[in-house]
Amino acid sequence: GAGVSQTPSNKVTEKGKYVELRCDPISGHTALYWYRQSLGQGPEFLIYFQGTGAADDSGLPNDRFFAVRPEGSVSTLKIQRTERGDSAVYLCASSFTSGNTGELFFGEGSRLTVL
Amino acid sequence: AQKITQTQPGMFVQEKEAVTLDCTYDTSDQSYGLFWYKQPSSGEMIFLIYQGSYDEQNATEGRYSLNFQKARKSANLVISASQLGDSAMYFCAMRVGFQKLVFGTGTRLLVSP
Image (cartoon, rainbow over all chains, first blue to last red; front, side, top):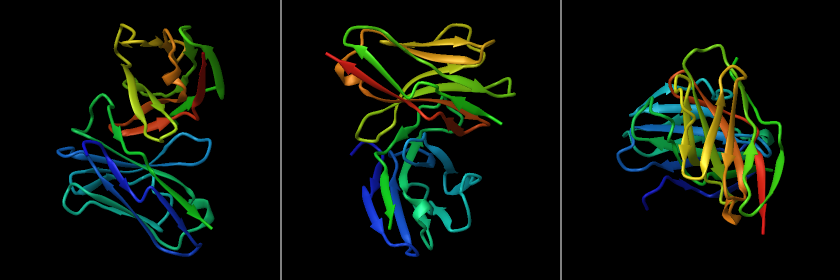
């Protein structure tokens, strides 16, 4: 498809388990972003990639969260030892260049539920 | 610290009427960008409109316009001629630094026939 694709769309896991969430950005987009949206809140920034490198990971809440983008396209958000407070929708976005007027193209998100 | 405030948790409007969604922001930066996104029930965030801090004219995109009042630090979204498909969550956001967007808590808009 032409848009940002995120998988899985829904993930239910147990506390303490490891989870991977995948984002496939729009082809040719060099910038990729992860946001987390808790119920009733706006999205919160987690991490931003320019190409393969994480240009800003200041939003990652702790060291249980890690993200990679090894070939500069697909990105994986990895959460270790999940906690109930990690339950949220994880949104991925991409844009053609960095520093543009903000037209980020978002995916539909991965809803994570930690029991 | 940069912050976006949306004080209207919900708004109702009749089809074909105009509606204003409020947004105020707080920043000490001179250069910043303000955005509005629409989030339908599918969850996808859809970019609507952008206003740069140095833009002298209010931004417009079709039925959307941004009422930018810099001295008041407000960036209200005006939707003219509301349609049923406009029912969704609307988020105001501000660009922090070069890349990060800070979002408000959103306003749920319901358009009735």
